[in-house]
Length: 374
Image (tube, rainbow, N blue to C red):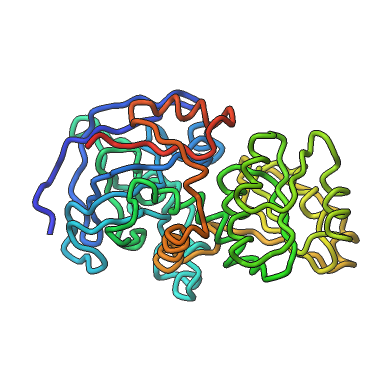
């Protein structure tokens, strides 16, 4: 049961398109009946935070972003059953729980996914964050807005994790790491002895490489333009790496695989790269699409080149994951040393958020994680 109606928080705010984050003293209201107040321990920075900063999607401003939070439950609403104060949690994406896809076990394709994750408020238009107790700041980004010392999340997008797990490391499992790993293990269903190529070796792409190794794929190819990322891909399980600045990646993948990959994954959000990922498939191969461009961006493919060999293109959201099932599995794989996503991470203090942005965009850091002051 919540005992505090309003609390002071420190949050990072985006006030205009393309602007830097500003750390501001704000107010956080009480949780709703099925909502939870989480004291944020750490939060990953994802490409999706930055495309909202740049208004690829029309999330209203000013807004508190952040959607890879981990922390400790501080207070709960009257109807919350999934967690209790003191529980360690990872915050993931939000879904309604009542539409056809949600009831069918596919919350990542929720009919209200866009409104609940990118709308800048609860579904009813209300927010929990205010500037002075009255001036509204948009929040509930991915149902959490965790670039903040405290966040309000719904019990549906919380994942309880073992208190022995490294909580400050786990936030990125809520989106980016889950997306890459789940694309391979859940959506594409890469199997033992098969071939897989990741077009992009950022956090999502490298997570997919690690997952392909877990799945038993025997040919695992990472494609990127940055040599340092390709070297890291080898550490993460890639059997081959391709610098697409130096060679044609389609020809190289066809050469490596003897005709084309069983599966490819496109995480850059660039239409021309998606075309390469489709063209690099073998007969009856499947290309997964996780890269997010601006709304309205279109891609092309050779119709006969798709139809005759029976290729498939699959849209994938959040790795086709049910977070409460999949994230604990990734935690255990990491504990066993079989999914070493800590190789992708660099920690920053919360007040270094704009440095983390710069390092992420330059490619210097694969996955920044912001530590909150204790």
